[in-house]
Length: 132
Image (cartoon, rainbow, N blue to C red):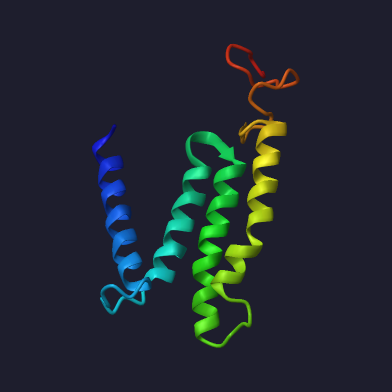
């Protein structure tokens, strides 16, 4: 496992524990930044889903869901919307199921070059084939 992966794992673990302590009322840390953390985490997941020249439906769906929870919680607390982060969490499950279904049907990743799906027999951009 790469050192950066471990570092991100420890950061997420620490943030999760701190937020859990505050949400359960065990210890009040004065943390009101968890919606921002969710938005940033959602952006990071979306960014990663477009990484290395391929696209992940599951990553996009999960990133939009996690980021949406944080964003709508911020907007709800500001009085800009009646939809809260918990509503997005509840309504986001169908989006995750749709993303998983698309991933299973079409393959979890497809190339940005012509949107051919990995494992597809009709793909012109397979390894070893020339598209010239």
